Length: 255
Image (cartoon, rainbow, N blue to C red; front, side):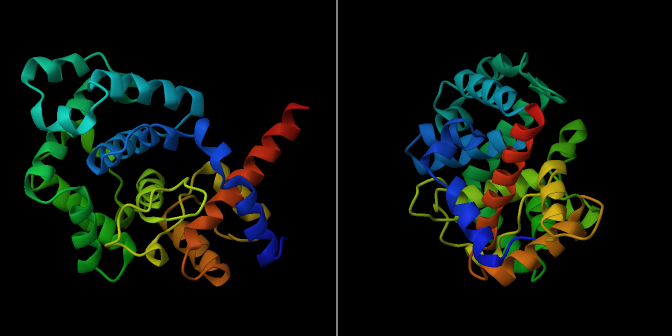
């Protein structure tokens, strides 16, 4: 088991500029306008499962289909432009889902913007998981999402909401290394919960940070509670330590 200081050092080791290039966060790093960054990050996060190279290829292709100007596309794309998304596929996320998401984002930006949608939802609930559920409700605005709704996680139903938590880390955390963006001042980094999936869950259990066996919302809360004991104001920073240990373990298996 690593000490708290060792966990911080391990996170610092991986949370640097070299992290960006091979990670999905490299996609929003291509942009400078706030809305472009938000939209590119949100779209990329929602397809961030599977092989990282595959995620990057798919996200790059999606941004290209949106004129490499995601905010302009979201706000101005006509039906013929939206139809260009029909052939988009990343695992179970397809063109129907991409078009639906663009139209939901358009509605959101016409009203309040993505940051306000998240921050207002989180302020309504003291429980972070219920706050994310409120975001989902607010984002859907009473509309039936059909098959596309499965791509917006609901922690109240047990989902670990890994992709949403990762997106929020990108938007909220501010660091000297310039990996996470720190664009959203309306949400505190102390509120963030760690992204949890099979790989980070395995590492967290090996490090003694997580006892629960399922990779669900209860495990996210347990892991984040432990991370807050190490870094009360920035628990999500320890996500880099879990990532780093996972990378090292994968390299050892290949030898």
